[in-house]
Length: 66
Image (cartoon, rainbow, N blue to C red; front, side, top):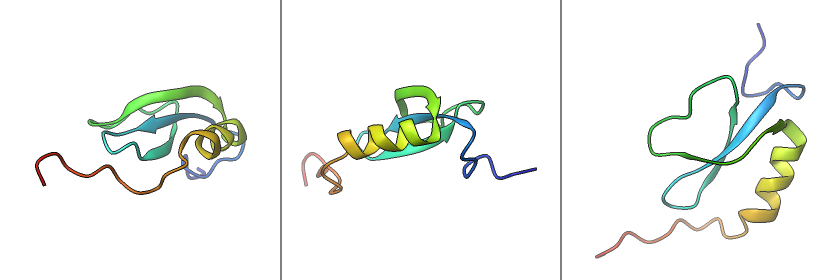
């Protein structure tokens, strides 16, 4: 069995968290708590292209009150 996180022919979601960090996630797996579907289901390259276009600031958002 191939690694579902590294399948160039797989179908993926792009997830985001409260810090606006992005992650590719296999579409056949439920997203983990704290992550929201931002794009997909789509092919691996389409999801990478989405991340490249939308995650332009890699710095996490500062925590409120800190």
